[in-house]
Image (cartoon, rainbow, N blue to C red; front, side, top):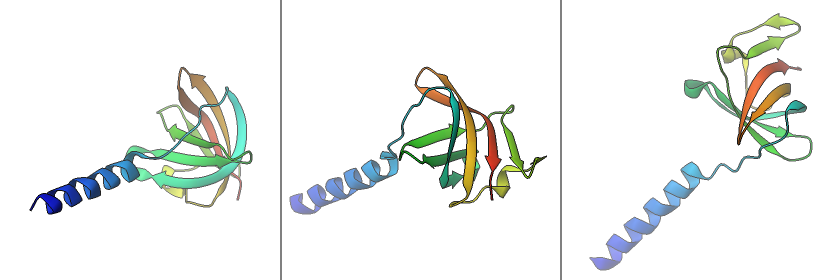
Amino acid sequence: MRSSILKGLFFSSILLFIACGESTDVVESGTYQGTVKEVEADKTEIYVTTSDDKTLELYFTETTSLTRNGSEVEFSELEEGQKVEVEVEKNGKRLDPVSVKIME
C-alpha cells in the first residue's frame, strides 16, 4: 500500500513538473526573428524560439498587432513551425508582444 502511494506521488510530481516546466527567457525590448514552438489558443499565448536558441513566452494583449503579408490576421492563423518576427517590450520579467509578423 505504502509503495503504491509513493509511486502515485512520484508520478503526480513528474506530471506537475512537465506541465509547469516550460523554460522561457526574458530578453531586452526589441525585434526578434524565430519559429513558433507552441500555440496556446485558449490563452492567446505563443512560445517563440529565437535564432540564438532563446524561448520567448508571449501573451497577446488587445493592442498586439498580428500581420501576414502586411494585412491584419486572426490569432487562429498562427501555427507551430511558422517563421515569425516579433517586436517585444520588456516590462520587468514579462515580455509584451507589440507586433507579430508571420513571415511565411
